[in-house]
Length: 292
Image 1 (cartoon, helix red, strand yellow):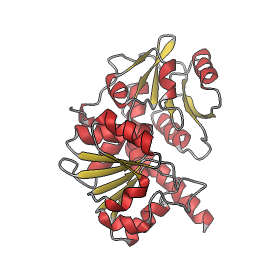
Image 2 (cartoon, rainbow, N blue to C red; image 1 turned 45 degrees about the horizontal axis):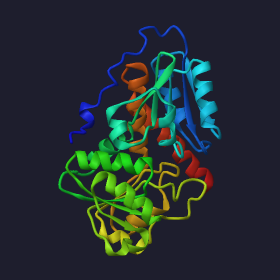
Image 3 (tube, rainbow, N blue to C red; image 1 turned 90 degrees about the vertical axis):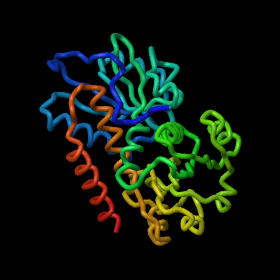
Image 4 (cartoon, helix red, strand yellow; image 1 turned 90 degrees about the horizontal axis):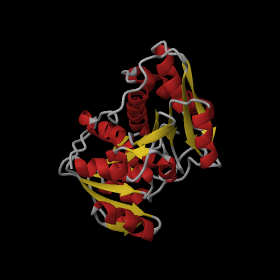
C-alpha cells in the first residue's frame, strides 16, 4: 500500500477554469458551532483574491443538505462528525483513497453532482511527520469512526503498525478487521504499550474540555501523544501527557493540513498554509485567554 501524501492528487478531474462566479463552500456536520473551518477557508479565499464564502451548516437531514448544495451551486463541502460514512450513499463517485478508507470528508462538484474524497489521512500523516517517523513504529489508535479509519489507512500505508482501541468492543473489532490489525476494548488500555497514542474520538472537545479518553496513568507508556481535536488547543489528554513526560501533538496541524488539501481539490490552487495555521492558532489562543 503506497499512501504517501506527497503523491496525493485530485480525482483526475479538473475544476472549472473560470473563477468568475463566487466559490461557494460549506461544512456539513453536527454540531458545527465550534468549527474554525469557516475562518480558515475564508482566510484562504480572501488571501488569493477569490470571491466566495464558506458556510457552516448544522445538518439534521443529510439528504436535504445535499439537495441544497446542488440547487445553490456549491463547488464543494467539508464533511465532519457524524456524517463521514453516511455521506457516501449520496455521492456520484468516490475516489480510490476514500473508498479504501471507508469514509469521506470532502465533496467536490462534478457536473450536477458530487464526488467524495478523503484528506484526513493526508493531514494526519503530514502532522505526524513533523514530530516523528512512522515506519516501524507502533501506533495505538483510539476510536472507530471516520477519522480512525483515515489514521489507520495512512499509518499502515507509511509502514507503521497499528492497534485499535475503542469503547465499544464490537465496533473496534470490525474496524480492525477491515485493516488487518488487532483491537482491544478501552477497558484494556492499561495493558497496551506503543510509541504513539492517537485520539481520534471527540472526547475532550469543546465544550466538554475536562474529560479525557484514557486514564492519565497509561500515558507514560507512550513517547508521543496526539489528539485530532483542535478545540481547545490543549486538550486535557495533551495536558496530562505533557505532565507524564510525553511529546504532544495537537489537532491544529492535522486540521490545517487536511483543510489545505481540500482547498487544492476545490480550486486547483495552492492555499496559504502558513496563514491558515496562523489564524487558527490565533483564534484558539484568544479563546483560551478569554476562558481564564
